[in-house]
Image (cartoon, rainbow, N blue to C red; front, side, top):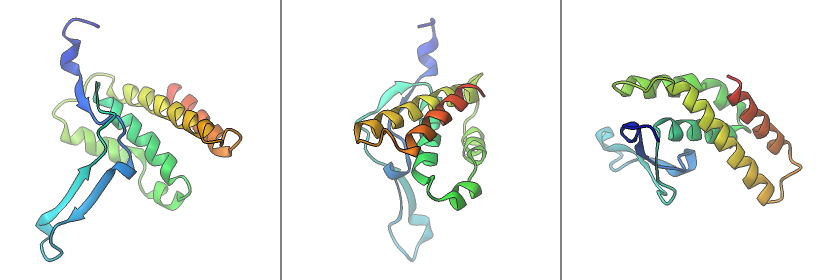
Length: 137
């Protein structure tokens, strides 16, 4: 590890995807009670901020792949731009790191598909191609 690089790490979720995010409202009469919460922190780890971002983008695409109408309305850049707008300063090479972690997440998805007997599925080949594409950006 490079001296001082620990300061570039954050406590990440480690399994950040749409199924681990809840959107709710405590009182239907009061929009001020609207909230967004993440659950399932058992995979939490210390990592670069780009880890959870890349993981989320890969999982979002994979989980919503059967719904192209949603994916077409919510391109990755909307999420990335909102994230960058909220952060005071993103690290140099942030978007490249996002792509590396997106590729890692796609490989994890591929391993899961093989584990559950979907090794011959078109989904396996799609996520493998998406992993390769993320590394060539």
